[in-house]
Length: 254
Image 1: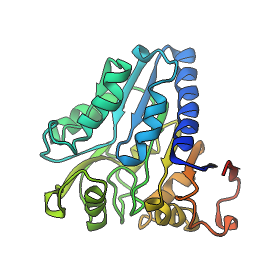
Image 2: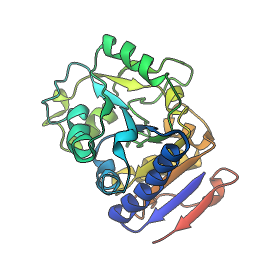
Image 3: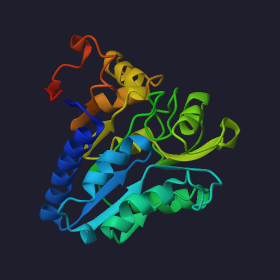
Image 4: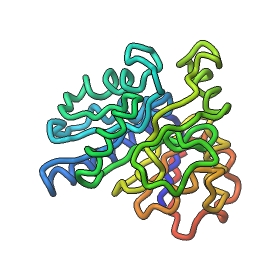
């Protein structure tokens, strides 16, 4: 595991984008194309903003995304399809983008597509409750399904309101389609960009706990090629680096 601490969210996003671009270019050079998974939410703004500026042949990139609310139209401001279309697809010209449409039929199509070949890079955020994708605690670590329908917990739904995606708690859908934890872990490289003070508890919980589905992000520490990008605010609650797993490398740019 590699941890990179930046002073600000923008510096974090720039560094995460540089590594992401390197992984994508390497896959294109090796096989002629790259397959990536993208997450959404306020924590990904800076990383995606820098990534779309990178010198990459985006015509050779295939994109999947992590999750979407059930029964939420793409026109809704909180739609993750809308988010990725506006912030990534439209800016890069990626031709092959697989969106989660929030239906069981969509799950079947996505499963078929994502299992065609390995995923080179997963940009996987961590939520305030330590979820990855919409796998809220206690997360299902056992299923081998690629995408599953989940019921969102209270903390997750409150996060969506706090970030401004919905006007009130009751407006947040109760269910979503989420890439499973197992499927996320199949990515060859995982990069997590986790800025902002609101994520400090989740980062500290992921760092200090052994593997547990009550802190889903602990699973990321078991991945053989995992990089965690944090800023000074999101790293603030980590007080004892001795609790980190064995071969952790820390770059501190604060």
